[in-house]
Amino acid sequence: MSTVIAVANQKGGVGKSTTVVNLAACLGAKGKKVLCIDIDAQGNTTSGFGIQKKSVDATVYDVLLGQRRIKEAIIKTEFKNVSVVSSTSDLAGADIELIELDNRSNRLKMQLLTVKLDYDYIFIDCPPSLSLLTINALCACDTVLIPLQCEFYSLEGLSQLIESIRIVKKRYNPNIDIEGILFTMYDSRLNLTMQVVNEVKKHFPKKVFSTVIPRNVRLSEAPSFGKPVIYFDKSSRGAEAYESLAQEILMRHKAAEREMKKIAMAGKD
Image: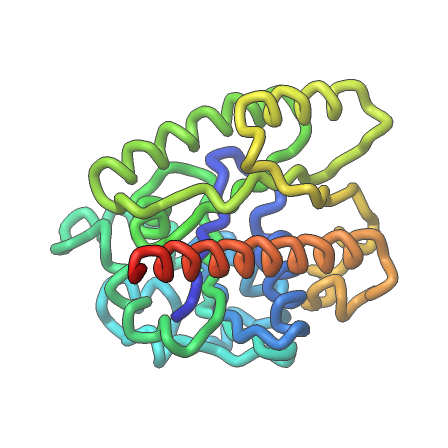
């Protein structure tokens, strides 16, 4: 059974797609089977894996509207153990079309149920807004990974997203939790960076990843070549950061599994 992680932030330009592409590639390289669902109309995750959008037969748009099954839309990438359900600009109007459909908040969740056994991790790249697409992602996921740029406005976006998660937890998905808060475009030389980090850690002491993602030229260049950074420049600081993040997530999940087994054993006694 896979772990479904929505990568979300209602603020744009914080590194959501960069995180989905590179974290998925790192986990895939470590032997985990990974599926990425691109529900952002910009399609950055799609292009980040070198997929030509014009050549795609079935997309997440077709899946959400019930025109195709998700298995028909899965594309195997050239990168180890990573597959993608792609996005195109058609998705821009999907919110309006979804309003008229039955079970409009759970359409992605119902589709994912048919493939969850096939993957270790499923990542959902969310649009930078609280739309029906994002709500579908939050209803379908187990946890939410929040990329956070180290600037003041990001704090406002974080508080809005936490409130959105709280509402979804109450109304639709009682099991949703925060996977972690990931600092992106990190520059320790800036006072503002440290102020933002300290403020977030004060309010979410157990939810902040130890790994931070630095500003890195190679990380910024990799998407234009249609490659995750570990396949573009494995020795770069960006590649090393996402390798570290993947390892941190694997360790967290192993620890959680051990804890669940302990609880289960205690219950039998």
